[in-house]
Amino acid sequence: MEYPLEGAPFIGDGPLRKFLARRGWIRPGPAGLVVAAAACALICWLPLLLISAAQGLALGDAVRVPFLLDFASHIRFLVAVPLLMIAEVPVGKRLGLTAREFVRSGLVRGRDLSAFRSSYGKASRLGNSALAMACLLALALLGLLGGLSAELAHFSTWQIAGTGAVMRRTAAGWWYAAVSLPLYRFFIYLWLWRLAVWTWFLQRVSRIDLALDPIHPDQAGGLGFLALGQEPFGIITFAAASVISAAMARQIVFEGASFFSFKFLIAGFIFLSVLLFTAPLFLFTRKLYHLKETGLFEYGAFASAYTRDFAQKWIKGSTEGSPLGTPDIQSLSDLSNSFQIIRKMRIIPMDLKNFILLLAAAVGPMVPLVLMSFPLETIVGRIIRMVF
Image (cartoon, rainbow, N blue to C red; front, side, top):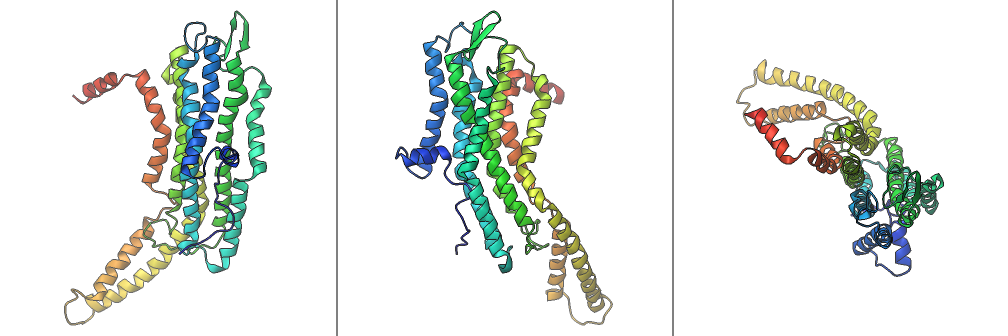
């Protein structure tokens, strides 16, 4: 059975993908998305390589950081940019399933179905708005107004080179500032916009009188599926964490920075990234708190009445026969299980597994940074000495 929603998919084809498809350069579907992601990565990265090579800045000692040794740029454009584009498929699919689950599971009652579909339609139009895309692109291009980038400006790189106090942007540096970096920023802004729109949609849904059940086995009143909608956002976190980790590694290698100088930055990024992609779930906390509170009172009163009747019949009464196998015993057990579900009910619709997946996406790219600063044999040796 289908549960159609008004409007286009919440996340449709990205702007670059639409541009390439209209000209017949790629086909629709996942294969076309992979081609578009590869094309965008090459647009960002390949000209940097060719121009740097032509200027003698790709390798050698002409500058302190030649292009091929600038692994932060490689990670940003060959890993993060494709991931930010390919993420459209898993995130878009999961958000669509999540939105439909409100209707399919009966959480949205018939009287609220029209308002729910209208909210989803508005959200899908906002998420795919051409005007929003243009504004995000303009925002990404604003960095050009700042003139020379301060990034690594105190010594020569493939981006900024010169002698003495005179440092000028190279031709490759101009492509980086005018094309590559704005494209990367655009995709970051685009995902922040999509997350904001999805949060707005969930905020609208949280105002609906949903048919929540305090004894739902997901221990979240029936909203446990919402956390599944947030999990694919871990791809965005992983892409951003990879760029940050590579940038810090470059400072360690070329500037002699210490790993410990980044400890607060790393901790702050991990905390904020996990909070950012779990924050939409907190919109239902108040509703779930009241559901749990009401459920404890209502089922508590019902349990008190039932257990009194049970004791009167089987403990204090003169009922003949064995209670083994009687429906009363099974009902008492079922009632106890239901009450325990309410007691364990979460007021945030996510469990430890969902949290760990998002946390791993933020922490994973930082592991190579740790291993680069503290070799594996050193870590293992210290652990062995502490244990034995």
